[in-house]
Image (tube, rainbow, N blue to C red; front, side, top):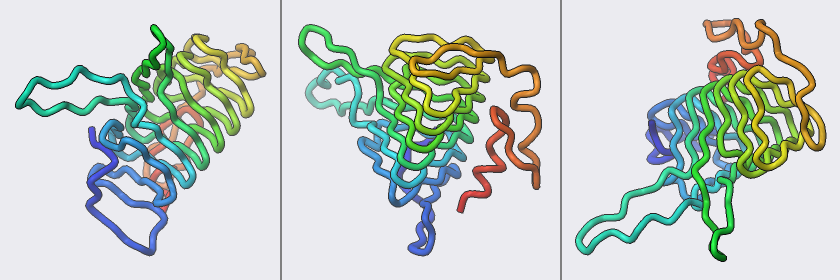
Length: 205
């Protein structure tokens, strides 16, 4: 696991900064609280995307002489892609008049489409999310799901594995079938929705 910084390779000529674990982060992305964001490797954060790692549950104050440890607010798995103008914001609950933020987990091979706003509690692996969606606070997306464009997933909704979801508010309209995610991953192969996103990651320069 690695955090978005420090960066090992810099080039003024490229759109992306590449980390030592192969993550590609646009110079035009807005990363807040980067010490609280974990990227597992070979993931992409595109231009205009906002990641709010600064929104996390406050840890107890360290004892005198001890250093405070960082808190992981957003965890992103391997070969996941956060498209342009997305907002990734950990879910929040008001308790006794205070805002409490909860850590967000995003799995491997997750594609998040352009302009989507995510405040989900968790998104499992091999999930394809279309453009313009809203994943409301504390919703849970199980593995191998497909969220169609402009879908609004209500707060606390749990989407079962292998579901196709659409609507405002969202509802399950079908199942993806056994073919979702099969193929992709090899040299020269194109990526497949719900499959291995490494070919798409490699194509992003």
